[in-house]
Length: 99
Image 1 (cartoon, one colour):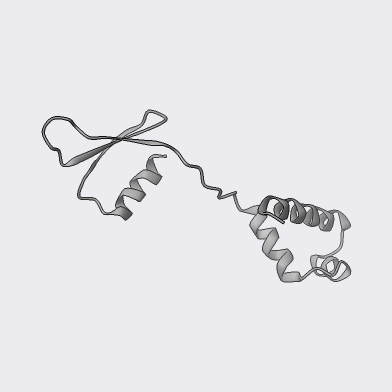
Image 2: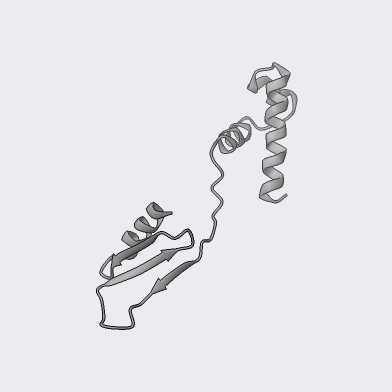
């Protein structure tokens, strides 16, 4: 099963339990479902989907005098000028904040 099929399957199992009016423990016992696995998927399906999306970035380098800034233009029009001295972690922090 791929991840989407697993999400669909466990979503259905969790709904069956909710409509059964049985406790989770009893439902799992009656349906031969591992109790911890049920809770894992219950928690996972409540959390927001964390699929990653790629967004193209345009890096502009000035054609005239060298600068100590890097300009990043996002597809949505947001433009950021960041110091070239930032570490990779600091750049990631800024990119995450700006998206």
